[in-house]
Length: 279
Image (cartoon, rainbow, N blue to C red; front, top):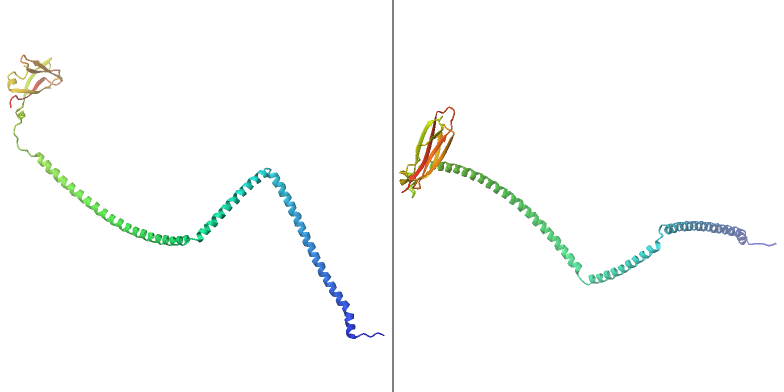
């Protein structure tokens, strides 16, 4: 009969059970991991299929919609090449500019200029504000001066109008005054006079005339005829006639005619203005 140590016996009896439990737990975890991986692979395969289908549709659409694709692709490639060249050039210029900026104090000068510009702007604003204030004061002063000038102008105009009225009145009074008698002129025109010859007849007669040619011959020795005119009353027509004498003297005669109703006498007059021949 075999005898076993109780300690070993217990371990022998219990070890298979523990082993079985551990083995079962590990296997369950492995199965769960495999299932999870399979699910993820299915999902990835499904996404790849969907992406492939979408790419196929997009490719077909691009081929149909853009039949001139190669030409545009070539043009885009040229533009891309040009952009790359421009980018390379700009990159080189930027590096050169960075190297230049790193070796000088331009930014310090720019900052200094900005500070000075800000100070100048503040000073300019203050000066403009001061100028506006001075301008407002000047406007007020000018308005006061304008009011004073307007008042003075109105006052002066009133005074001048009053003085002008006084002067006009004085001139009118002076013009009515008789001036001094001056000496006779060379022609002695103040010695001239009017001489008239008159003839009258009944208005029913055919013609009325002055009696004789006028002026008489003796008047030509002393006087000169300046002008001659006819006048008439109680008639309709008058005519001035000329007569040349043998001594080349001109005498005048007025002829009147016509009848006016209500008038019984027709008067015919000859007026001669005579001036002295010798002064």
